[in-house]
Image 1: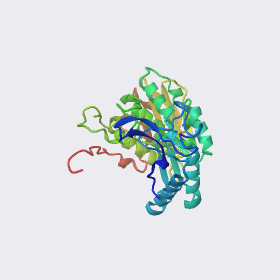
Image 2: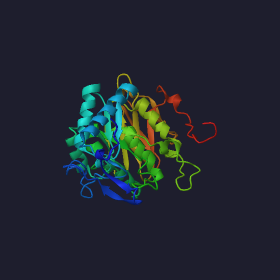
Image 3: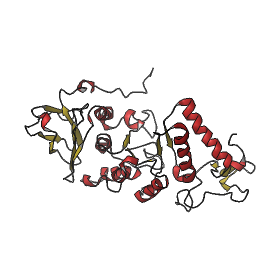
Image 4: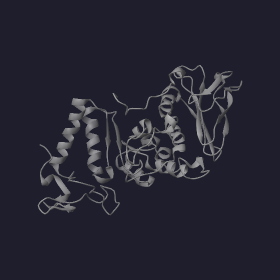
Length: 357
């Protein structure tokens, strides 16, 4: 069975017979109509309808067809994760049933994340409760915090995680800085000043909480030939370096130094098999420094900035402490200069638009 007939939809936005564009509700058997209250987001009364043809997830044939599609994806392609778009606009009851069925038939361990784009932590927590917390959401409030701090002179960095999902339910949070909807000129644009992007990415990539997601347009830039959307790679071309620093060094226990409104820092101590660790310090005003403890096991070592934005050296004292610096409106990631992998921090070729690529 394929979803195809009018019985499988609740609405559409075009009447071909009369060449008319509007939101049309499809009438039918008893119970036909928009999703029940509470089964979709309550914004605009009921946010069931979004665009084009609205699928009726109450119809048993629709439900079975989508269940079959999920099983096909797992069996034929071998996926272990799904991103669900615009989940404010379709049945939370069906989605909960769908992921439960995927767990039941294809085994547990799935990575399910949904785009519930709303600057309301309470609404997000309520949604996760409906999903028995067997689900993740993109942390929209965090993006808006980044945007606000980037546009506020001397904003208080200690508030960056206030009222965010990653602070409240880190195991259910996918953290991000920008995406296709919030980039410039899009409907949900949340402008983040360029100087703040490296700080924001450090805050999601190098910390222990949340599952970070980087934006393709930040890594590679956005079409250099574009008329309106033409932007170079963000973070001064160093986003790949930030990501590599996470892969190599951001492991183990975390110690925070969020004791100043304009300079924040934290240390990752490493693990038995990822022993090097790292120390991150950032400032949204002037040049700054933090005394931070990286562990007595590093006494006597010389640490340097893997981003190369600071050319200083930090010698760890006998108690495992060092003074780690960064330039104003910048970030530095400090690692033992002879740590495994330091030779991998070379220039990243972000020019995917050049001929032959």
